[in-house]
Length: 74
Image 1 (cartoon, helix red, strand yellow):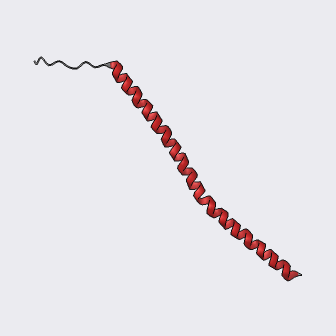
Image 2 (cartoon, rainbow, N blue to C red):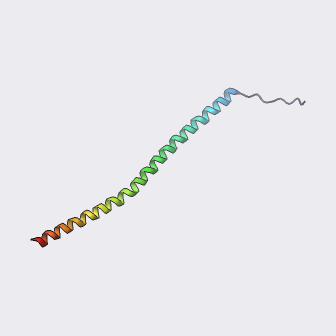
Image 3 (spheres, rainbow, N blue to C red):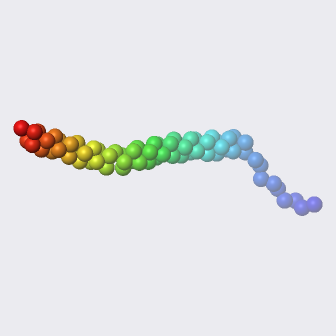
């Protein structure tokens, strides 16, 4: 057998390292949830503007058509 000395396992240090890793993981997960929510909001906003533009064009067209019908009717 060799006279090699095995390093002592410091349990307190290992627990501190594990606690730090858990805290970092929780921070990462919270940031990830925030980014997912932001991405979903951006997706919603991306479709909202064109929908409002189309509604405005349709509303304007109906307004002009109603005005013209009113002019022709009288």
